Image (cartoon, rainbow, N blue to C red; front, side, top):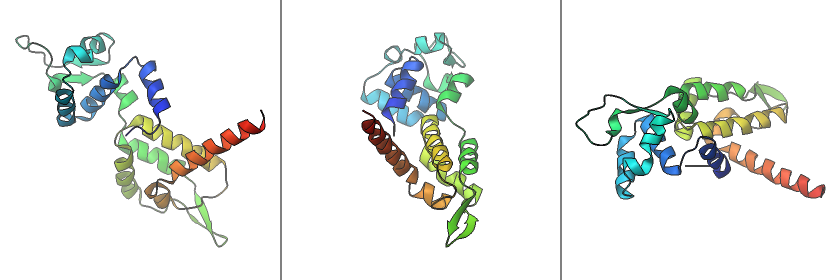
Length: 188
C-alpha cells in the first residue's frame, strides 16, 4: 500500500508516469504477472491505454523476445531497464541491512546499556522484507524516519525487533509531523 501519497505523487510526476503505469512497472519488476493481468482485465486496460510504446521510447521498458507475428506486447516478454527498475524495485536484502545498521547501537534498561539490534540479521531481513515488499518508496520513508529518530536521542527506547514489529516508525513520523505543525504555528 502507498503510505505517503505526496511522495508517491512526486515520484509519478518526476518520472512522467501515470498510476496505472507505475502499477504495471512495479508488477512487471517483481514478476507478479497474475496480479497485473487481473488488474488490467478488471479495468479493461490494454497496452495502448498503458502507453507501453511511450515507456519503451523513454527508455523505461524494453521488449525482450519480440514475436513479429503477434500484435501488441506479451507481458512476459517486457523488461524494465535496470536504471528505471532501481527507482521502483528494491533489493530487500540490501534495504534490510541498510536499516539494520542505521538503527541505534544500544538501549538503556535500568541504566544498563544493552544492544538495540536485538534480532538476528537474517530474521530481521525476513520480517522487514514482508513490510517493504520490494517497494523503494516505503523503504526510503522508513529509513528517513529512522535516521531522524536515531539522531534525536542518544539511546533507543526499544529494541529493533519491537521497532519494526510494531511499526513504531509510523508513530515517530506522526509525532514529528505534529511537532512540525505545532512549531510552525508558534512562529506565525
